[in-house]
Length: 305
Ligand code: UTP
Image (tube, rainbow, N blue to C red):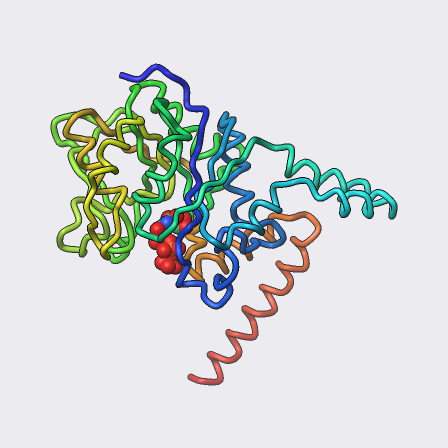
C-alpha cells in the first residue's frame, strides 16, 4: 500500500489527433480552444485545483505553442499594461504562474501506454496522476474529478481509474472495466477484476468506461516497459493496468461531474455551447441564438413533413 501523496501529473498530448485534421496538422488538439481557453488549460486548472504541484506534458514536434502558452509573454504583458488592459495582463500572467510544467517528447506516436512510459524518470518512485485532454470534466460546486480519484487513492493506497457509465453502443470507444464480483463497491469506489480496451458490445464486461483520469502507482512502469502492442497496434495503458492488477489491487471510481468528449467533433461542439452559455458575458446572446436556431429547425422540419 502506497502512502506517498499524489503531487505529480502527466498530460499526454502527443497523439496524432486524426479526428480533428486539418486543425491538428500543425497544432496539438489540446490547444483547440473551448470558447477562448485551450483545452489543455482546463486540464491544468483541474490538476492544480486537485493539489498537483508539477506537471509533465508529453508532446511531439508540435509542442511549441503549448510551451509558449504556459510561459511568460513579456512583450504582450507590456503592451497590455501600456494600453491600460490590466485585467488581461494579469490573466495571461496568471497562466504562466499556475504551476511548474515540464515537457518531454514522445518520438513516435506508439500509443497512450508508450506516452506514459516517457514520464518514467520524471515520476520516479511516486504515485502520479494522468489526465487526458480529450476529456474535459466540470463539477460546479463540487470537487474536481481528479481530486475525487486522489481521495480514493488516499483511502486505498492503490491505483484508481476514473469511470462513468456510457451508452452500451459506445463501449467500443473506451477502456471498459470489469468490477470484481467478490468485493462490494464502497460508495463510488469498486475493486476491479479486469479491464478491456475498446471491446465490442457483446464482449464488454460492463458499460463503465475509463474517461481520461487515472491515479497510478509507479509499478505501472515495470509493465509498460515490457508491454507489447495491443488494440490498433499501439502500446495500450489499459493492457499494462490489467497486468498491474495481477500484483496489486486497482480500483475504479465513478467520479461526479459532467464530462465532455472534446476529442470528438460533436463532443467539442457541445462543450463549446455549454461553456459559452455558462459565461456571464456570452450567456444571453448564446441562449437567444440557440432558441432562434431551434425554432428555425422546427420550421424546417414542419415544412419537410
Ligand atoms: P487518442 O487515441 O484519443 O488520441 O489518445 P489521438 O490518437 O491523438 O486521437 P485521434 O483518434 O487520432 O483523433 C488518447 C490520449 O493519448 C495521447 C493523445 O494525445 C490523447 O491525449 N496519445 C496517444 C499520446 O500522447 N501518444 C500516443 O502515441 C497516442
